[in-house]
Figure 1: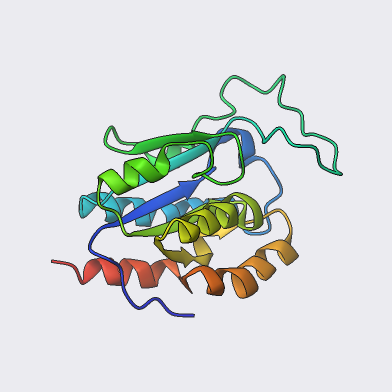
Figure 2: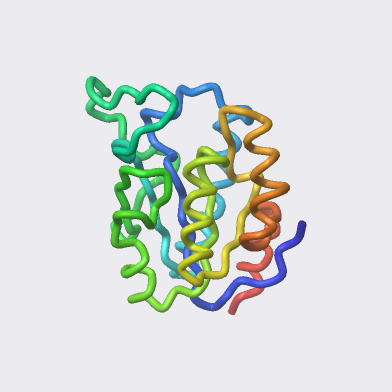
Length: 187
């Protein structure tokens, strides 16, 4: 579990750290997740590397065995990003309606237009939004990096399974401090 390299054209993709999800019972304290994401955001911005902030406003329309989640009657600020992310004018905002940030959005086209070859994915929930985004990025040909302490889930078993079984097949896993150290080595 170690990060070895960040491509010169890397982007940070922060998934679903938004007001409507902030009150959920995540297995890791959300304050720490936001703090580590903020450190990554600040470092990427300081190096003038792309930052992508993703929010979710709905769900895929397909039928499942679980009842659909309520999408009507959500508060008006449900999709607003958490203030701790300190959104900047140059940040890319992607609004999704599925688990992954690449499906049914123009994220891939935006990143390719910027010459991005690697993405660092963080956020919530580890086993859904973060995993789906990481899978889609890997399938699109990006190098994927996953700071596992900058994400959390509603279920410890989902977080642990994804970080130990799935993520190593999609890219490199490590900690926020590892990614920050690699960024600090840049000119």
